[in-house]
Image (cartoon, rainbow, N blue to C red; front, side):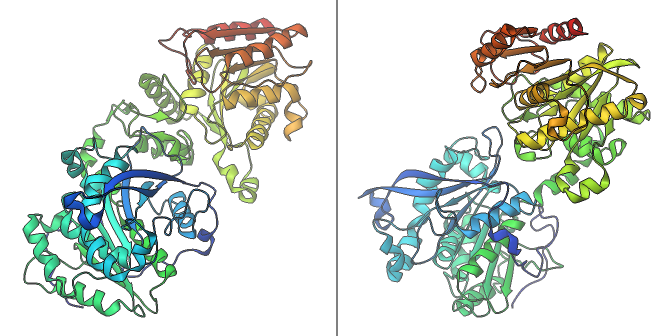
Length: 615
């Protein structure tokens, strides 16, 4: 294969060269993943591509959009446009919301395993008035793919990036161009032809390209000339081109690539295992022109695009990171990753923030956001993390495993559990605080750590539980935690009499279940039920005549937990002679935590007083 010498500083953002060998898709990736992305239909208006310039016929078209697991509007995503091949349409590659394809499962698994960064994938079609357009080779090759870039830039990109959260600040032409580093285009077979035409016409809008087994220009000179005319330098784009030795397009595809690399111009530089460049050409031995090849090529391409960029930014900003901790203390601009990786915490540092990163956004302590939560205070986040760091550095034990190594080995999910300890006065009573998160993740930084810290300031020994998401597993972990504290009460220096269990949202349901049934019902030891249950913002209605005294509070504008449901539950318990206290805060929404700066501020003092009344 023809090539030229390495050009210095080419593709400066690349951390390492693309591997020589493609990775085979793991067999288990072909079945449904635990954490599944979502497929949605997006309809948009365009003009018939054959006559786009004349705008002679308006069309409504559809694209299938993949949103990654945990997709959030307050987080920005890279977006990749993935075109189908001949005799196909927009549903062929990833399927439909009702019937996803195997490739959709592969993408889910790869994102879950960290091989692909969470991204948005858009599957459009170059077909116009009929699905048969894709099967008409002359029409597709000579007309539809040639003109598709008009629809792509003028209609599809604005429709997608005006609807979903990408790096484009707006759908203006300027902002779409400004966000090109976060946009890619690829396709197999006729979709590869579309990719080449997109490259030739849309370098202003795209940085990454994944052509697979489909050539546009058998000599490569048209592609080269288009780059020169565009005014873009070789550092402005990257092409990952893939085909197979048994593919009927192998000859044409290879000729085009070799022609591009053999040009006298300096627009293309080959990237191999030892050399950075802007064009990586990979050939899979024995692979033909089929669906398996298309899936494996797509999987490998998406594994490379963008994944190394965060590492590069970290490397480039190392000096800035060194300034983010003043006198050993965390600041609002301290990176979350720096806290997690701080050696003072050892392995449990990864549990300080949600294990599932899809449920929080932000890079620093000052801009962290948690799904379903409001009123997050950056100063409290900084206070909590500094409390942990200072006590850990002084040799205090601030984290306890609740399961043995053998139990965690038998059930790896138990690796992500444990108790953070906010120590109060020796011999004082204890509380266990449980964060919410819809039984999908644990929002401890806003919904249990702040409560535990405030309780410790009042002299009480407070624990914040990190549990396995899922209603039953969460209750099992809470039962185990309560049992652990009772068993180790002397070492922990806590009084187990009239202990309390606290929770917000899903955590409140956990507290209520343990109050109603006791730890033993969920696999814990035969220990007493809590002396008090404190609940925030949950619609839980179940109770019994043996329930402990219960304090509850909620906002009247909570769209998740109806305040009247909570009120009716406590009224029914009160009728049974169970001590209760209820507060509904006017105009407050879900997940207000300590409520600092809201009408609920100070509620925790009321809750502590209620608990003390039961002692």
